[in-house]
Image (cartoon, rainbow, N blue to C red; front, side):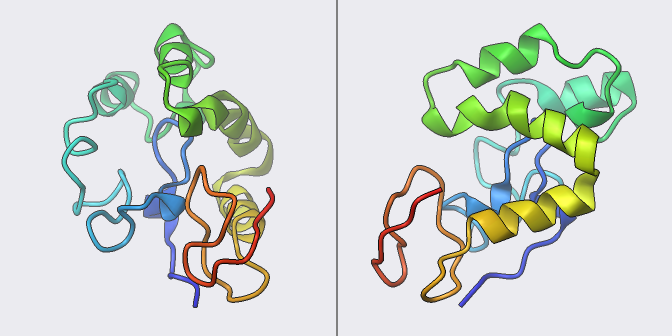
Length: 131
């Protein structure tokens, strides 16, 4: 069964929070008011940066791509490697179409669950999952 997702799952930095292991039980996405520890303060500084640039997400910023986003992309967490590509796609498609694409790409064909990032097997039904 697929979890319902909203635009709140489109992170400031370009991550799709809907496939985070914390979603939806511990966090509803970085644009929501229900954040897991770590995202609530955003150690990478995206929340403050977005406020300073008067945007809601990096895809709306005139300074994209920037050093902050690149440093986040290569910080050693494999799921961060996609942020620059994702932000570019958000700019190209718009947020709603990008979100639809993410849901389609990360949905298990067998059970309909959203497969969490960095997984090659669906965490719900156990079938192989290839992105």
